[in-house]
Image (cartoon, rainbow, N blue to C red; front, side, top):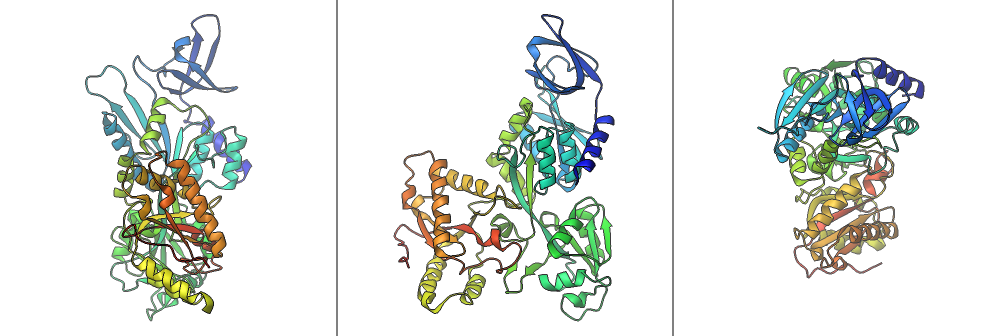
Length: 511
């Protein structure tokens, strides 16, 4: 979105119902006073949006006058701008789990574009506060942050360069920095069909060609079915621009349903339909495996999403402006880093890096690697495959080229999970095998060594013998994406984590 368009959206938010009644803060000593829209009060600080800009004042130094002033013992809580489908299950579940962890009960008010969770403790005279979910598109969420109508955004994509520049120019900081952008989970755009259909795979090449037509048929995707191919998308998502970005163009007729659940239901009732929905919302629909020209395939499973093995990834991220957050929001952000929050996220159908053993795709990758291996490297390649065949792959894959793009933040989250597992004794360092991939073995080894150095920083326990972690490299011989694919750079440059069966394993000889 261009800067002028952003400014128009923000102006609309400022001039409309987003602004509450004004209050006046008057100094208890002296004749200073300031009036504005009360944005937050957390018991210690008032934050006002005045005609001259935002102002933060200590509560003990001022008196508040106005209809919007909090009553004794009350605070204003915080507001979250939430992408549409995330407001159905994920974010409400996180709010309820946060409330339960803090000993609060919750009452829910409202529906539609704003839902308010009121948190309170039975019998307590203070401590009650609201959490408002403002439901909108991802683009609108950044406008909401810019207008300071919300304190946090939780959306299903990364911030764009244009949005990043706009937020920075608005004085709200660099939202791509780790303390302002947080990866919560991973989802992906799935090609969905009715469970009544027989298809399990779809060629990305055939899909691109079919959707570039104005009257595509199912036979364009392979097979003999001459039925028209009806494309169905979410009306409230941003899926069509994503699809155009991934496939190049979409000329096929598109029909819309209100949300992902409605898309899935339409597939069930009409098998000629073809849907694009988040993998987390497939429900009764079946997600097709995306097959690249070199034969490598990608199924929209939790494991493939968590490990960066799915090209159409959708990161679930929170964005927080660089302004002082209310105390309750700081506590909520702390809760999002807990195991309890991770369990809520996974139960809601979203993926996260984890220690869970995954069904490895080694045979398929070996077949792709055999096309690339030179005769002089064959013996070592065979030995590596034999070693991995006796090990156990877990759902931790650490991408290394993530400065930009959809996987930004995954490296940090995966490393934190691995470091915590070592610190708590869930895994022994001598069991860990880091298998690094890159354009060549030397580059891959640098990737693995960088991961090891970051682990040394994260693991505070001196007793953790990280020196016993072993490293294997194979360059580009076990790819997870076809060379030349738009996503090959960030999918193939990675460090996978495998668990050795015992401590007697020895590394393969160096080339």
